[in-house]
Image 1 (cartoon, rainbow, N blue to C red):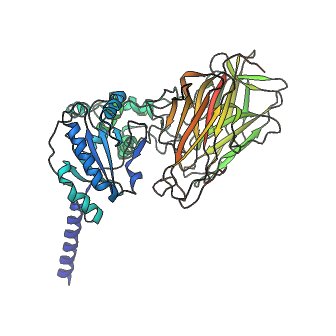
Image 2: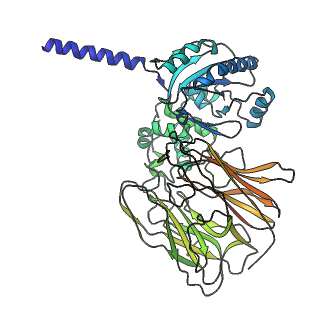
Image 3: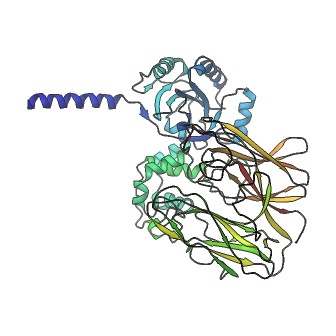
Length: 568
């Protein structure tokens, strides 16, 4: 019996070993913008049988013929549930050059922008015109090679018979990966290359007691979390910039350069080595003391009520009014938030409201409404916010402060008692800051993956736009802010192509924009109410406007001041 048992175990082990060996190569998830500014994430294409990507290099002489062959392939297989796109795998990262190359050829395939070449490296593409067939459900590579040899793999994937990865040598122009070659010959050094990037981009949130789910306070922590760090970089979840870097520029957006991305990912791919540095820089990193006033003692301090935060669960927004004791009008020139527990306070919005005003964040009114927005807090925002020169937030005598809190649970019950410091102008400034909501009504069908919505507003006076904020809930997909020019064309100010309900800052324009009276501004975007949206709590629901997070909203907030002085 024992011999038969051992033979049975050996047989099972052999079968399992064979199956494991035969599984397709896992490549993981990734997300890329395309040349039109749309966001594509592999895992959100699970409604396709497979996704086929072809490497694109504008400098390759055979590119046109390769695209023609790829389009023929698309014509044959698209109706069978196969998705197609090009991926710019060359070291050319100039978006305008890539857009011009696409326009000159006239094809309508999405052209993904692999700016740092990291996705192309992950797929191990080596030739222009080479294709990769991907399974978006299992996040695996099914085939890599020329178009001519791909039919068997596509047929097998549709039939459900693919058990491995097929690789066929491709011909064509070689793809060059200069950063990969550089880091292969000299692996980035933890002390001098990696730690400074982490300190600048990550550690303000990923620290002990911070909003990040783990602390990046040592090499050991980075090494242990390196697979997760690689994934969130390639899916563009982190840093939580959200904005399209090719549209406008914002002083508080967390941009990460291609060089820094390549340095981090190549270091992780090399095993995240410690290097020879005697001291671990992250263990000695001193973060700003967010319990101190950066501009000295404020003129007035607001203490929010103490709130109980449970260990687990999803919390709705909490709206709170705080009475102010001022017996005369006040003008705020700067404000600082000191969170009671920054590990759970995801963000906070504060408005100045009239005594009888029923505050709900301005979201219950789907018409355009102008509000006195004081400021907002978001993770990592430890310094005081000083308003632009000669501007301020007006607090009329008798008005109150209304605050909207968004907490995220972290596995430990806690309390939050946030403190807000107000710094006042001695004399009224020239301009008053306002925030206007531009919203729309909608009815999102169940399971709709790309339901579009839009709203518009016409400013009746000359204004200077200084900030923009997108607001939707769990089904939010993307949002864009635009100004309509006299000839009917659009100037885009902000695009949020990969909207996240968990990250909603007001993006501050580095160069504020003058908008003349009579100008129409637009907010456009889309919802993903499908089962392929990982944040969607229930795709079977038809959705309309509602205040709860499981309902939906579509609001673009415009922060501005009048172009001409206009004190109340």
